[in-house]
Image 1 (tube, rainbow, N blue to C red):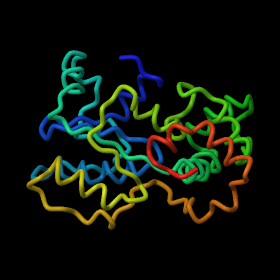
Image 2: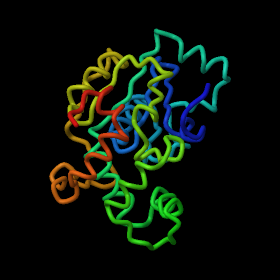
Image 3: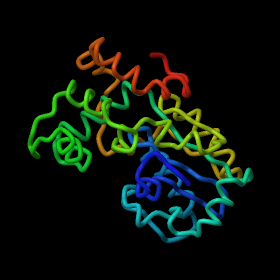
Image 4: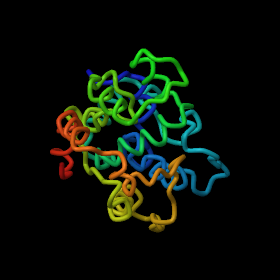
Amino acid sequence: MNIDKPVHDLYSHMYISLKNRYIFHSVGKAANSTVKYFLYAEESRNTRFKYDSVHDRRASPLISPFQISEDLLSEILDNNNYFKFTFVRNPYSRLLSCYLDRIVPKKSTPYRELVKFLDRSVGYDVSFPEFVEAICAQTNFEQNNHWRLQYADAMCDLFDYSYIGKQETFRKDMEVVWRVIYPKAKLPNFSEKNLSPSKTDSVNKASQYWTPYLKELVAIRYEKDFIEFGYDI
């Protein structure tokens, strides 16, 4: 399989349930932590297993592609009996949330990757315009998964999704997913949890950061996301 991103991202962000026959692909900064919270809880129901953090991939009750053979993975990906889903987000709020959460604190791996790309040292204050200009100049492969073009990160040109939900309509869309993958389970209250490590309030802060110039850069670089997922430029 040829993918437009590092293979370790595939291993880290594709979640497979053999028991309940579904595949979830998590897109960075698009409700993925909250989705995993509910999936982990249901997958481990009636067991003594507890998950302190959904961010430790090694402890996940869901299988990563590297844990099964290539033949079995190909069989699952082509199997119409597997429900395949992901969640996406408006590129403007997603990128601003990423900047506020991952770049401003200067502590994350994405921050270190970005300052290396900018040929700067750790500790450098990356402005929002610098951030946008840099990530728009990167290829899909170079981009960190938190700001990678969602269409590329979710491998939409290779992967026939059964359903693509949106963070903006999370409760409604997650209910659709849940009724398919866990038809006999109680429907949780999907409004009660937001498992993002950091709540950035990026929607309400948009006017403080987005200029016409920066919006145009993103509209061009992330055109696939706007068109394919129905977001208004």
